[in-house]
Amino acid sequence: MIERSCPMNIHKTRLLLIFMLVGALMLAACGKEEESSDKQEDTKVTTNNEQENSNASSSENIGESTPPPIQEAENIPAKEKKALLAAFDQHVKTFNQKDLDGYMSTISKNPTSFKLDEERDYIKNIFETTDIQINPQNVIIIDYKDNEANIFTEMKTIVSETGSKKKVEQLSRQINTFKKEDGQWKLNATFAMETK
Image (tube, rainbow, N blue to C red; front, side, top):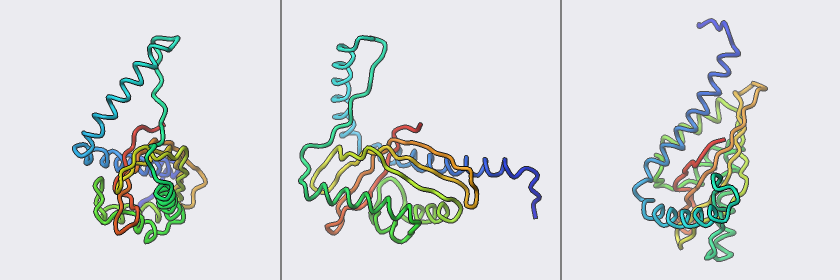
């Protein structure tokens, strides 16, 4: 048995470790998708640079630039938009309910930014060791093709060690890629853009 001389530091360390694991998972997701998203990034970078240049030239303070606004894709059929948002909502709902099987049913059988079995083990551990809630804000479908869509969101995460009253909040900007499998939208990849 290990004696605990400073339980508060252990709690802080565990919370920090949880956030580091969540961050590492998000960063790992970014790295694995780099090659397949190069074409999309080239198009987006060109568009973003044009918008930034336009914003910078019209800005009163030349040293300050603001990122372009996130805009919804215009080519989304209403039926697909409703289905995509329902799939995203179900993903969040099952996570917040700590419904491991339900959560895993919202994920692609062949995800590209993580391994399915590792995700199951990781999420199971998170559910067992923490009280965690995610709260999506500013949910926008930013890219849509027949069988693939990207959803931008600012994801507020509230976490505490199971049994602890101390909570830590984190806000990350994410892009979640959904693909159709057997007529259903499933989460295929998650990319973290920044953390506040």
